[in-house]
View 1: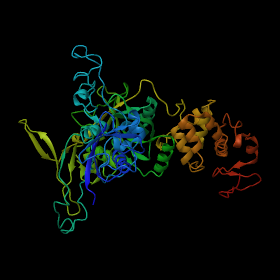
View 2 (view 1 turned 30 degrees about the vertical axis):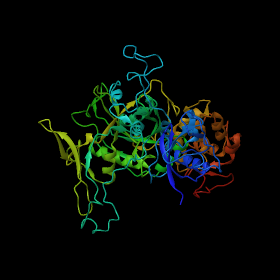
View 3 (view 1 turned 180 degrees about the horizontal axis):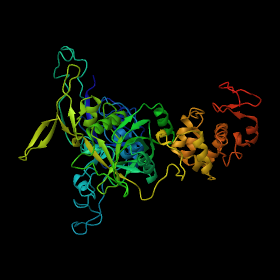
View 4 (view 1 turned 45 degrees about the vertical axis):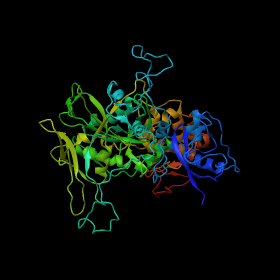
Length: 609
């Protein structure tokens, strides 16, 4: 057998060891180098000397022994295009940190793929007082800082307590091994299956299958660093329900994830719309009902370039109706999130996991955020953003955390029973003598589980959807007398006389009604309109307006007694609808459009008059 040798190859990304043989050809060896460094093509060169002399060419006739390459030699690799090597020639997931064995290949979110390619370093100008070098030099006072530098984050205004998740990844993968052995493992509170050395729980358990005890720590990073509503109208329309009824309300936030430039490698959740599912709200409680349209809403949002980024609920109690003030109830002396709300947030975050290339499970944590509309120190409505930690997500996922009935600020770690084994959960505290002690999490202060997120509104409002003085009603508000039907649609169209059809139709709640109404759902024929709204393309919107589906919608609106200003302008295929109106008739009972010359409805068989 040929003698095996190990050759070191140094590149801008570090040193790797390649196993080869003396009789191996240069072509075969270079293929191993390309595979090890993640090159997709021959966009690199390997040299014997550091000064780029003695290039090793891909020759099938020359062996390593002939090239005088011995065991332990150092070779030098240089990408052909250094500026773009990470994005053009090399696999980005490999260049940013080698994927540990056993981790599946996953497709991360667009914002994650973008931040992976960013430098992320914090560049500083030359200090005129402390720097003693020339304009091209660098010293400790002006050298770029890493994105996870805690001193820099603590001196920001306001101070940042949590580094961004991508800064945390850079910290893990910033060593000499470039994160070769980094793996973000999700916590499990369940007994490992497949242990055959003893009877199953509760008859037996061993150290191999027993989950480890959990000591709660305040999480140093967060997956989302800022929440921003595109404009005040989104929040005001959501708060209108509480203003009119006094009952609390709930909604899902739909938007997108973008870069948050105020924090190194930060992520911002931008909210473009709020969907309000079926629910029962009182002055001090909320109950969510089964939502049969949830899947359709997610599908429509995806076609609009949006996704579910969080949830929002109100906790408002009026203090003085004449002044319009609300009670300031959530503060450091009470709680910021109750244990029940933390459990709900953990449930939602488990439903929306964050896809991560460094996790053996393919996901780690979540970008799903929680927003509370509550009273602030000035007794005005404030929006506070939160997430719960990955430890809380694990406790909720494995059903190990319970709320306390009489103390909303306290949770309770379940005790093991014959049905379920629960590992011990601890947290660290300071006793009255100033000593650090470890306490059993029965009960548990929920501040160990909470991560706060800044919630803002932009100085210059952004509008993904059009804003109207007479907006289309929001779904599931029948208790207010605001219903989504063809009468409300006809009223909306008659009051909005804009010549730009795209402005009229660009309403999130209106688009949902067109897709989900029971009379004429347009789920299979609305893709062109959604693309027009997503790209702000008036021509596409006008093309869809001339379709047969929109002509039928106009006919249905005309049967409710509201005259549409542009009804006779556009019909099916762009023609006049006057002839259609005189020939076809709508059933008064089921609104089905019948052919002329019939006295009974073809759908419900009831008489015409």
